[in-house]
Image (cartoon, rainbow over all chains, first blue to last red; front, top):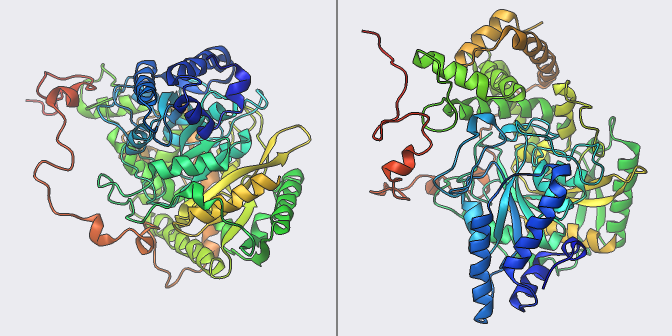
Length: 482
Length: 104
């Protein structure tokens, strides 16, 4: 009944669930096998921050007793998963990668986590990330960096670096991440896994520690497109606890994958293939587009003329919202406090000074500046207007195409430390991903080959609002053809 | 340079941050380099373009559903006192405690 590491490597959601269902293994021994793997391999990678063994084994036991009684397991029954540490887990430490929440144990569960567990998933633990999900390399974690399992000298991407690395290193079958500017798709590309950012409103944000509320989304990182489809179905749908969650029917995404892609129109925008795109990434993405054409998709040139303004607009909108959201960390109700302060104001300042890392302070200052008297119109309002133009670009393109294919990131994974001292260079790593965040549309990154140095490359597929089914279908067609 | 040392001090004050001398220099440099890059937004004429705070409204989030009738006990019952206070850095068991606000 034991699982060797080879077994864990090929293990998909359906394979894990059906082996628990068929009693060829138990959910408990499966969880134990993953914990053994984590204990053995994670010291070199650094994906996990906290393990939730009691909770995992209790859930595994529940799944085993269902299987024992011959009842049909739910879609994720017995499947070991990991959760990015920005999602609240009742009774399990949740730090958002920050010292300021170093001792925070939430009294409630994030809706997406609760839905994963209702669907039978076994939550192994909490995954490392950039502090408050702010970063593109995971180097902004207050605890320790994450090493890319494909090349330990390189970053796994960010901010969901732990979520991508855990899947890539077979330390979870699937994980949840969050995406505000590319934080699911870019690490998925860097680590060679599938990462799906659903439409804004598709998945409840209740219990997600807020970074930028008009952009933040929760989504899956998995080994296969089908697994992403299964997880999305489990977590999607209206939640009264999040008034921005949409009351839009949730299709059976896995069943949708069966539909043919022949005749689908795929847009290719020249703005995503310009200066700064690594030549090997370009070659792989172009080859992938060729494969999709061979599968019967029609390739149509489209234009998204405001793309070059997405990064500046994003870094105003996101930091402005962050400066407001992070005001709640004041040392009063939860988290750490500087105990030596004599006045309330001094206590707030010292707590925040000691609790937040450099990038978080940088963004709070930038956002506060953009919202401050005299600069609001020039920065915040201007960025919001440019956001409208970016949305119109996509509306125009989606009048003629069903989905848009681009590179996920202009380069493959860079070296740890390479961009750590240059915030602007780091921000530009998000250049192909932030547009979809600002526009509220869904996007998926699927592996599409490797560089000469054997580093994974990601193909991004962007879709219409609430049309995750189509981008999953295209991603799956590519995955099958590749 | 758009942002001066004085601006950094002012904005830090607004954001309830203190910042050490060692932090201020690099932050000043970074903010100026980022804002220089952000200035390219001014190449765009946005006259008559409405600002967008939230991308979702036209696409499924029905504003009528965003607000709802009051529910007496809330959608979820309030946390028990003990649970609400369990993460407090300082409390007396009933209230959160903070340093004295008013000197008498």
